[in-house]
Length: 634
Image 1 (cartoon, rainbow, N blue to C red):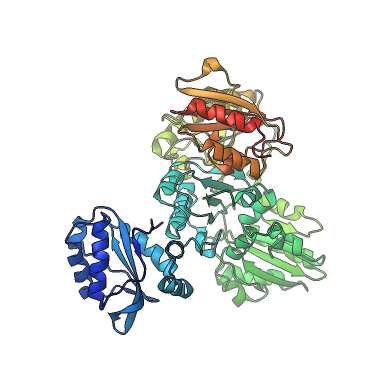
Image 2: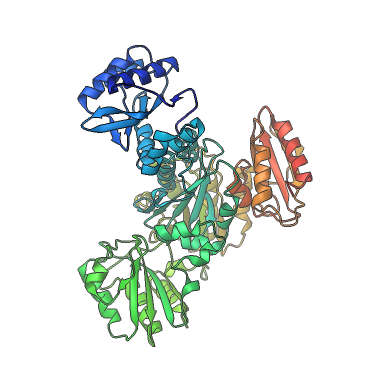
């Protein structure tokens, strides 16, 4: 975000022409230490090459490549000319913003400026106001940043990488002025928090300039919410993410529906038009994922329509990933016009005496590929709401993908493990994984739960690499045979040890083994990799660390308000501070993240263990203990 103050804003300026105006802003850049003498020459030369008039009474003169070496510190100098300055071609500039930027840093400045200055009301305020603080606030976008908008929502991303989704969200927040580069560096370097229901959250204690949310969702439904929190005013909205119904809606909702879910109204979730709460007793709603490789082109669209035509029910359809309006699902042209690609979620609403049968027939048709051969396995289950027999979709799903059952059948041992490796399962760790399994007399298949892949042979290096497993992805192994138990236990140990690489990543969800004779194997492996997860002891304390375990006495536990008070206390200290809920056996998470504190699920009587490292470690633990004893603001 622009760093604006009275030092680089001059109101009520006067200039007889644009050359004089440019010389004024150039002199200001020199005086403020942004550029060296001579930069003015480049600014004047730039103006002869192409006009820097943006529109709405705004001009942004800046130097040429030949004078970039004169830039000492990126910044701006702004002059307001209430009487206006002729800028050529009939344009008059009332606000002139001189820009000095190293390399391509000016691009971020220009993106922010054009976003703010496209607002005619904002431009008029800038031209007339006599209040420097108001001028700075309008130009910085502080008065025009919504908590969330369509510009901070990215749907149907062709990547299942959480790092990619983090980068997309962070870039949008920076472009709109919510965060700085420090925020981006943090969120891209750290793993998001898995809240469940395929929803992940990330935030940073650094670089927050304004309150806002960005949402990115992959084609498979994996959804990441990035939070910029300049103060505690988002607490209630952040707490809303702990509601499982809202998490589920976020993984399928359109942009407009997502905005409604983050609305200020506490009942916003029930106001989203696509939720089952609005359906009438005569409606049956089915939400299905397109499996077809080439989406709904003419052939599968025609099969879809033919599936519905025998039924008397009125059926409409909308593409949730494109936010389309409901259309007649019995029209092939209307279905093709949905622009539905593979992994898109379509929502059908049927009304009439045979609505139930129509939606159940659709469920079966989608699973069977709408007349085409399909192998794609959706990351999000198809659903039927308002159904007399809601098990119909589940039955269809399992018939198409019998390995999707969560419980092992007799003779099977199932292990679900999180990838710790920084660069995911590239060739080396994949080879170690395969070598770990080969000595055992067991058939082992593997699927990437985060990409919704089909089960593949876990003893094939090529098949394991093809899973596209990134850090934090969850892999599910199913072993059958006399050595099934030993094979899965060996895998558990190999994952914790990094599959031949050094790892420090701590998963948000524990590894599990089902159908095991000795299910404690994973727990033992977890503790060997994360000895701090056990009960805190002074003897085990690392040099430079200070630990404290405190009991929460708040009647309603750590909801949004006391969590915010706790985070503010933690932020006072020059120390790295992590916390875990001993009563829920949670992982250690940053105590400077409001979202991660709320997500600990702390109720009255729960014990929180804090570990502080750094110059203020002792002060931090003492301060946290005092704040908790005082009730965290309650």
